[in-house]
Amino acid sequence: MKAIEKKKVLVVEDDHLVSEMIKGMLEELDYEVAGEAEDGHEAVGMVKKLQPDVVLMDIKMPKMSGIEAAILIQKHFPTPVVILSAYETEDLVKEASEAGVGAYVVKPPRPGELFRAIEIACSRFEDMVALSDIRIKYDKAMKTIESLSKLLPVCPGCGEEKQDEDYAKKLNMYLSGIPVEEISRYLCSRCCSRTDTES
Image 1 (tube, one colour):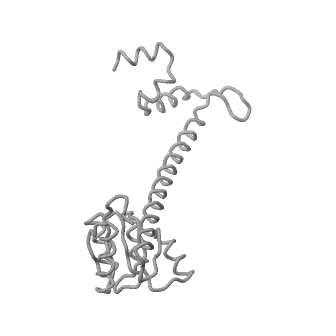
Image 2 (cartoon, rainbow, N blue to C red; image 1 turned 90 degrees about the horizontal axis):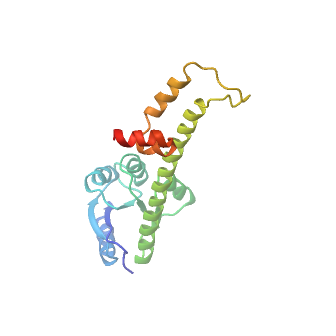
């Protein structure tokens, strides 16, 4: 079993023997070990510096736990995170998920389990990024609809034409903020030809 692409993995583990075992397993699976950290605080700094593709992190460590580090990583340097732990409880899994962790592996992991956890965390992270992009586009579209609804030439309540003296001014101000290439498809042929000659 080999990784589809050579992802860079940051290993965060305070037990040296476990860290060495994990690194050997990652190399067998054809992942690249980007670096090592021994606590959550160090992990956050190394994520910023090394920009790994995924973080493989112990949950119980000195100075800062894996959960606390995962929260900071997702807030400041969003990266897929896999949590390693000797324990698996429902509360711990829930807490890890709420911290933005993409997968969970019980120590000592088998190579197949480690592989699946890394690939699942990366896939979930890609889905989260895609959903975030969709949300941004949705919010932008809703703001546009809100702005355009204020510029309707008729009242949406009664259908009467608005008698607003500033209507043309407001419309022109709104249109002036839209790039020509976006608005050109709505122009009449005369305005389109004028826009072409001006550009």
